[in-house]
Image (cartoon, rainbow, N blue to C red):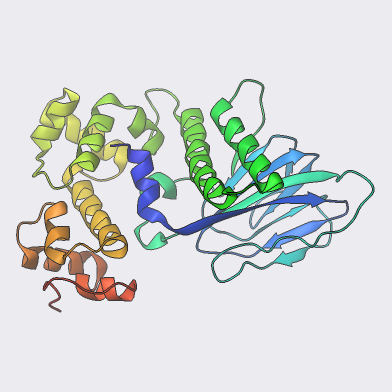
Length: 315
């Protein structure tokens, strides 16, 4: 299994949204803090990103910025331009800008988008991102990301039949390309730390793929170490240093995270959910789930808007 895709899927909720904006100087847009994440791409012209904390960031054509933590921020034609609030709808969709007939070409053309995230189970792979991920345009760099941006811009501009489905798929693709480009750039050498180094480490990444590929398997540290060709002790030290917790602690965390996703998104019975993540006893699953989430699995499912099927709903 792909650990990066899994980490994103575990947090994603609802549909992503995006819009193409033509702007004429002077202009300024302020985005309030939210539970989701956002991105901006400068297709033409220039802009200033004004983060909630830190100095303004000058953006040029082709630059991509990703704001992973939902902090408030602004975009403007200059650092001191008055700002207008952009208020998303109940579904997270940003309002389309009013159409204004202009004789001249717009000074700046932007792609702006938003993803809805469940931060209650934030994967460390995403949590360790800085407030602003900036991927400046460079010749020959991030070709897949550039291709996705170009396709998304075309779809938002032309609005052909089927555009809603295509845009949603392209936004999912764009998010993964942004994250991939960032971690490839940050990976560094053997002294690296954190998830960029964990994904680059052959032994640790092999163990992570095994856990994500089959969370129901009764993994042992020795078995995971063998996947990476290391001794048990050497593997445990390396995994803990890079991932931030011991192998079996991460296994438990990922099982419970997967259980939450299955309870939110599927119609599986509670027994089937328990079996999918490695619990043969429905009662043992319910106990472990409540220890992790503070609520019984049936109550969690009802809170997510799904009917409860199964019996493991003891307080």
